[in-house]
Amino acid sequence: MTEVNPRGGSQLDRIDSKLDQVLDRLTRMEERQDSHGGKIQAHDARLDEHASRLRDVEIAHAVSAATGQQGHQQLKGRWAAIGATALVILGSVGAFIGNTIIKLFHIGS
Image 1: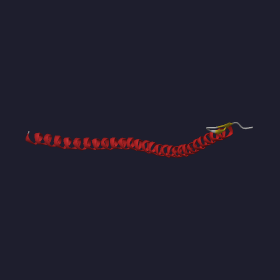
Image 2: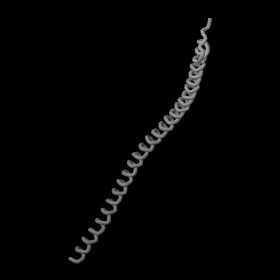
Image 3: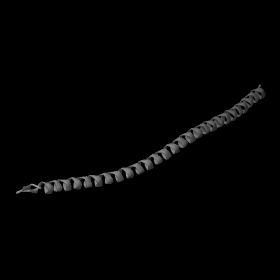
């Protein structure tokens, strides 16, 4: 019942060889798909790791920025205290010099 072809064998042989080729191609496609799936999972894991690191860096930056602002405010407060102390000292020195000059004029007159 099979037709015999003198160059390529029977139709069933040709169909069988074509099926083998298709199955080989499908097998290679599945292997590539599995390989790509593994790579995608590895990239997904790395992406999660990078997201976690980025989150940690953002938190550290926010804490650093808040601490820096707080330190800047403390530094401004310190300079204000130093300025006030300097004004008090200058006032005392001015008062002493003024009293000395007044006493010199009173003694001389």
